[in-house]
Each structure stands twice: as structure tokens, then as C-alpha cells.
Length: 293
Image 1 (spheres, one colour):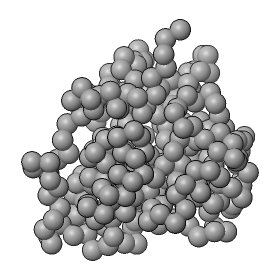
Image 2: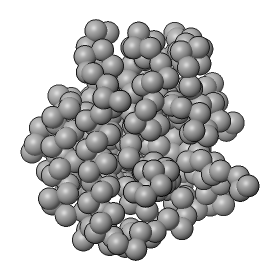
Image 3: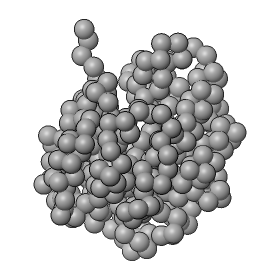
């Protein structure tokens, strides 16, 4: 049996091989956000930070301080069908994770995997988190129902338009069914389709995703790893009244670099009121929304 490649192992392998390009606006390994002109006028938070062997909690705290960016730490959470190191699959797992981060200058979050992740946890324990983010990158196969990991090399769909229609619908379903705060990696496409990005992400498809985010109160992540969503999507989302979160989703020592996010903030003229902040206890999605199993 072939060894399963998770998002984390894929990204770490790519990083080790030098496949990850440097973030735009960096020079000599240093961020270009130091000038006063680049200050967005509100504190920056990277809500999409993963810990690993290289970026331990201690190292993450150091990088957060050096970069002047508060971190939101996320661990994968869901049923054991999702094979991730450190996967959280029970209340006991989640309680230990929350306790590990308690008292640290970070936000506590999880990256939810699959539509069924809430079945693993009680509402009260999930409410102990600051936020939950999820995405549509684990895509259900139309025939078998098995989960297709869209970030893996070689993933392809012969009927591109059919895939895009189903993928758009699944993005909406993730936000409609899951009690989440943030939709991560928005508008991501498999490598095989990236060259047709603008043709495949039509205004009609983008509108459906944006309308769902607004309807269900889900913040749209501006992702500096993939430099997504692109500006036309972001302009449409702002006009529709969406909220935005910032996320590097970079696995390695460049975590917390938000150059693309800051550039988007400047171009869109976003202010603090446009940016996601975790809901207080009693008003979190897990507490106020009903999970549709």
C-alpha cells in the first residue's frame, strides 16, 4: 500500500526540495513590510500557522515576536479517515491541545477536515477554541465518495467544467454545513488546472462562494502561500460585505510572512472592521449554528 501524502508532508517535502518560491516583496530573506507606508493601521494576525518539527511552539512564538504578527495556531481535526500527524479526533485530544496553548500569546484554532468533523467533539470543548477554519481541498469523488486531495500532484479532471460546477457547490456546502469561522485556501485549484484559472473561476462561480461566505458569516482567508484569492475575487467579496482573515499557511520558517495579505489590504483599502476577529464565548459558530450531518 502506498504511503498517504498529507498536506503537511507534501508542503514540507516541497519546501525541502526548494519548490516553494519566496514570498513577493521579500529581499535577502527579510520582509519588506517595515516601512510606515506598509502599516495597515491595525494589528496583523496570521490565523493559519501549523506547528511541526521545524516550527515548534517555542520557535513559532519567537517568529511571531520577530515579525510583529500574532499567530493563530491550527492543528488538523476530524475523523481518523484523515491521516495527519497530530490529528485531533476526540474531546480528549482537543482538550490536551487547548491546554498546550493556554496562556501563550496565540489564538487557538483547528483546521477542520471533512464535513463530518463535528461528530468527533462536543460543542462545549470546540467552543474552548478561538476559531475553526476549514476548506474545500479534500473533495468528494462523485462516484466512489472517497476524498480526493486536490493539492496532490497529478490530480486531474477530464471534464473541467463539470469539476468546477461541483467544486463551487462543494465550497458552498462546506460553509453551509460546517460551523466554521474561516474558509481557508479559497479558489485553490489543482496544479493541472492552474493555467486556466481565470477562465474556470468565472464571475458566476465566484459570486456563489462569496454569497455563501456572507450568508453564513464565514471570513474569507487572504492566503499568502498561494497568493489567493486574486484581486477580482477580493474586490467582489469586499463589495458584498464579506469579512477577511489573513493566513500564511506556509510550512517552514517563512510562516507568518503576510506580504500578499498586506498588499491586498492596501489595494482594497481594508480597515479593522473588514478583518475577522474571533467571536466571544456564547457566539461562536459551534454554539449558534446547527450542524447538518
